[in-house]
Image (cartoon, rainbow, N blue to C red):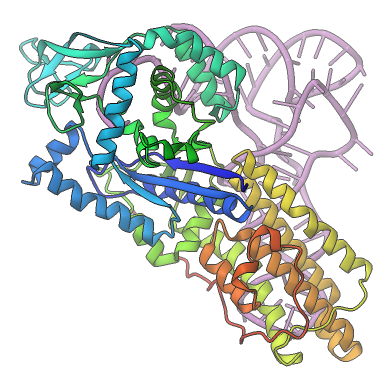
Length: 512
RNA sequence: GGCGGAGUAGCUCAGUCGGUUAGAGCAGUGGAAUCAUAAUCCAUGUGUCGGGGGUUCGAAUCCCUCCUCCGCUACCA
């Protein structure tokens, strides 16, 4: 049976348009999903939107809409983003789906049956105007010494009935989880943080609200809606059919790819919920970093909010994807700018890979009648090229298994460089007159190496890689990793060569 | 405050269970080549490896200390 691989992004909170953070997470997870498909696994890639909660109902109210109508429009923006960035998800789950309600409520009942849910009082500083609780240390003092919310609105000490989850009972099991399965939370720095957080002691968690009603109703307690995280996290199960037993086709999840800001919810609360509900735990949680615009956080006030789709339109989807995946070490923070995207895309895509394909293919077109030439007996240089190329897959697999997407791409592009060096050293343009047979052989070997490089580059640059494979007349069914060793057939007719990665213009210097 | 991480070439970073002349990419400089998207190839770095002290035959790599930056420190997602 084919090995299965289930991976997810976090679901997006659609109280605004998609931003670069959403795009980055989707692209990175997509690269992983595509990699595993090409590597022969059956993959299920889930993404979606988290459509409940106070902020959504507020945003809807501001927009003069009902929450349900509001999220309808907002979810469409996220689906559109996924489509335009070539995200290959298998399903887009929305927490407002009836099936999701059934899932979250089933989990709740199981946790309740375990004896982990009890009714108590939630106390805190509540702002009626904001419809939100604030922590003591978040409060500011007004002119008359009264306590105010960070928004400057009055707060009152409020006691609200709430259901609680016995998170405290799971402290030991979580520590054991982190110890016996050190890869559960990645990167390691995040695991250490979670370990120290859990070791610091866990308090029970309030998991229902009565202060707003835009959420999943608590079973048999109509005044209560579920705490947003219990609702949101259960998408990973509802997205694959839970509570229907078919969910076991994919569960347990291989990895939840998430932002570093939500690691705690995924690495502590989620496993605790699942342990309580008696559902298997996911295998890993990976917290990626943030991408910063020119090293700064984006904010509307600073006027530096960048629309990822605008960048994709301007520079190309592959270019944007490649830049983010190659330039940002996965798991760490990174920064981006238009100049950096252009520099990276030109150097690696246009100059190195694109031009390599072009110089080789145009020689074949002009000197070999547009037909794949015949390889001669390998020279030492040919053998060296083959040797390096044949070792590349395992290097890429090793990096991808460790979520080192940037390292995998670095390795592929090192080979692109080797191939350019090979081409230059063998000088097929000189062989044209001195030894036409050898010229054909060099062109054949270069073309076949480009074929393999394009196959390996597909997770990052699906469009450009596909175009390269088209130019090499590679059959649609011969584009996965299993086909890497399937050499090109001499005599195959090739289409007319065409540039795949255009050279990008450096943007005009904009003085801020 | 507590715990943890980081500070290496102009830029982005790799490298530390101590050991030959500290590396890569980009940028710069020189050369070659001219098949190709003015792309490619080759050569080229007098870097206080954050400051100071210590251990050692020997430290970017270990210990102490100081400076700077960052992350986590629970119920907004």
